[in-house]
Length: 308
Image 1 (cartoon, rainbow, N blue to C red):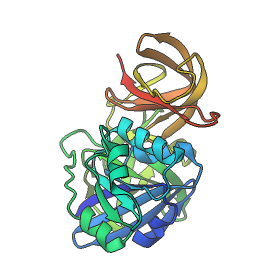
Image 2 (cartoon, rainbow, N blue to C red; image 1 turned 60 degrees about the vertical axis):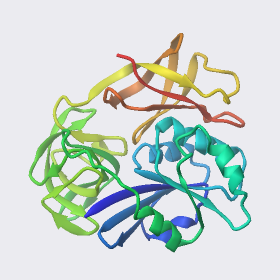
Image 3 (cartoon, rainbow, N blue to C red; image 1 turned 180 degrees about the vertical axis):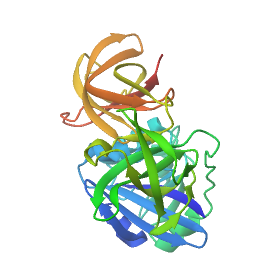
């Protein structure tokens, strides 16, 4: 079965229209099966900037409402473009000026989004045409977004298979601890499976680690397939609309499902050094998002990838 994960932005009610409600925290999950496709919709709670960036880091496509143009919409466009999400839907109401959508998205990764009315039939018709090539050839890795214990079952993590194929009874590492764990069982959409391909939304029963060690941001992957460090040099693309420019100081960083405070300790041309008080888990081309959560207007400062 094909799996597709879609982020919903600037519309905090659409998820309930498109799917059955699942896990909820600072982000809400909604699930639905249509023909041969399992859809997972995720939308941040209103005002939750970190959750918004985390969602963008794991999705295959985006649904963005253009009903209320303003600073929030503009920042959403900038962030989606920085992360590189190229497939999705621009939702318009009957009175929306489509030319305005074209102008706002020109030169960004959203310029090829399909413009649709806020109608679930139109939306699912468009989503069914989105082609997504899963990365099943790379080593397996899972980004964890929730964890909990179940009596009689043990420790459970919910997350997304970012690459490769995760298999039942497979031994992997938990990052950042670099601790060996065992995948005892795999569930997808409330059914048991022996393996889960790239792109899948999964629930894994894990042996060898506690719930506290497997909180959101943890990575389950093959040994030595991720880097772990408290300091990372980033080749940085600054957001020109962020007031004040990039300076040394404490800000907030999102890497996949990881979200943590970090200090910009050095700026050398387009390279910045980030130092955190915790271990950062990343791969060579991982996208780092830098946010100023205390800013009055634009919070998104820019993004980049490790330079070494």
